Length: 291
Image: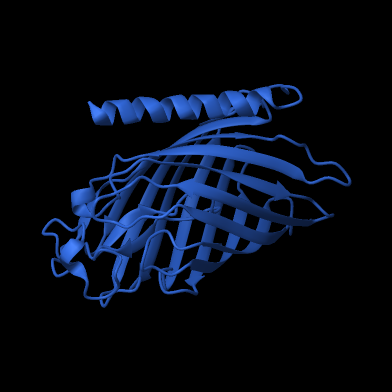
């Protein structure tokens, strides 16, 4: 009953956020030529995340998005998650970080290496290191271009999101809690150059065995339209500590966008973590199709 009420509350929040974004906009533009997008990604990362064990993780998100107008976009992301052991918890710090994969946190009560007594692994200890896999947390988003780009003004795009706890917390694939939050993105074209930045805030649920915190996210980068279809991007992204006993997050990334056809886009990246709770390295590939 309690879970049903939480689900209803989050759906209501998502609906209100979408309505608020729409009503505060100056006007509604026409729908795009291809209003629907489906995407499938594959992301890999490896790191110790403040523990004594290395963890390899795979994140495979399926995304469905619709743009009723050229400004409004609604999307849902349904991921499959695999990790080589359950000494860390998946599902933290995904939203608000462009092209970000799931960040892992120590399962041992957020106390650092060796503090496994309060962890979320199936045996509730950090010494049980079997691999785990399954559906991750589903995220629903509503984004709106509040201010369109002009010669002097950047595009401003706020996004509201709700994360639903569909991942199995007993397998350390998620926190088992609802999260909600927002981001605001600013971007501007200066000839072939495309600088951008984004900042956001996430309210995490209260988990019994994880000292979760609300946290801020940010990213900033620069893209260059090399050809009509190729756009390399360099960016950094990070977050304040998402739980007690963890570090802030910071990662550098090289990314390449390739518009293969009028309706098909491909994105790939390589990443290098900088702080303790960031992955040591990562890579990803995603394909999107508009229709």
